[in-house]
Length: 155
Image (tube, rainbow, N blue to C red):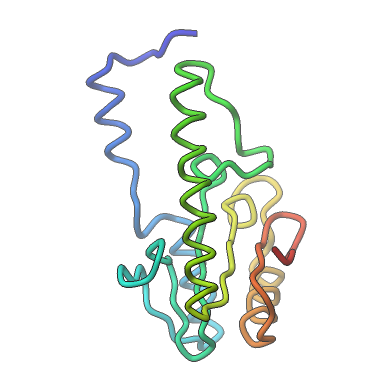
């Protein structure tokens, strides 16, 4: 199937995709504030520029879009056009994520990846369930983990 937009329009649309203050980041920020957890956002001095840095517990949180970071859930769909280009681009994102995760762990940071599907969509977790899992991980001092629609999982 051909793209419905010309190249210039598609390029303009792609540039408009936000890299900060996204809806999922705003929801997570609200949950952290409700729990009284102090955080900083998008620290460029740390590998991967984590979306949230919680210094008190030496942990960082990434909010990963399921498409851009190739999560195996219903929100990820392989594009029908320029498939090879997109799979290569997304593959590079996944490689960079792995590299950044290892660098952060080496520096002594714990990492939580919060997937978009846990924050929005038909199977999202409600605020109480999400808050409980986040607080449990932050305060529990556990290892690196991820949260998706199925709950929390160690990596």
